[in-house]
Image: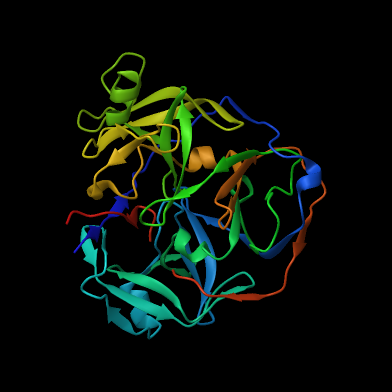
Length: 358
């Protein structure tokens, strides 16, 4: 039986960006109208993590947003309070771990609503141990991963704390707010998690997109292979030296098909349990190997880079459209839609499902 574990998320410092640029990747004439299904204002906790307002069986609740997780989770206490029927996973199913515990249960939700979008009876959540938290008297009941958004396009405008959901029924071109954008091929890993190939200081590397992390990080296994430096090399910036806990950063340049982020402050992640190889797929990008590292990536974009960007995830086209957050605006071509019902599948960002050891 294969097990899949929950990826770790650390509390990290903010990135400092000196420049973001996006080049024109498609002409204005090629854009077609989009139908916006929902416009949602995200809540931000004091520590920076983001919360999505939802309605579960008609009751107001909040869920962490973690685009770095392929699956969504509801806390066991919330499942019990809402009277959800908890079922055991099939013995042959993949397993996920969460906070050190293996997740072996799931629930079907009859009604989960985000804005005007109602996710129907086939929406499933893994059940994780844990009590409900609260933010301004509203319960936090779990975490939303990207599985829930597999039947919609979604846009993240984190500078304005906005999540938009769009119909997938449109022609290519997901940027309605600007005349130009970077157009980047987007992939789904074996866990159905989202990632893309990016260059860091000119070297291609598989990159995760995680709103469940505050900072952007690079594993030292990758930095050694690609650039021959690690956390002890000269040119690093040391922060948080308490004698026991040391955090190292390095200014590096991130680029991807028309997008450039200069002098990004990258945390060096010293967990080298995953081996880094150079794959022949996606331009010989550096990537993790081995089943224990499925759903994890050597480079992880965190909130403090993502909030400088505006991203449109065209999930059916497998394309990521990106501009700077302050890209020049144009007249919107996104038409508001009516309430929609979708079938979907639905963890706190500090813990999100990813591959566990067998």
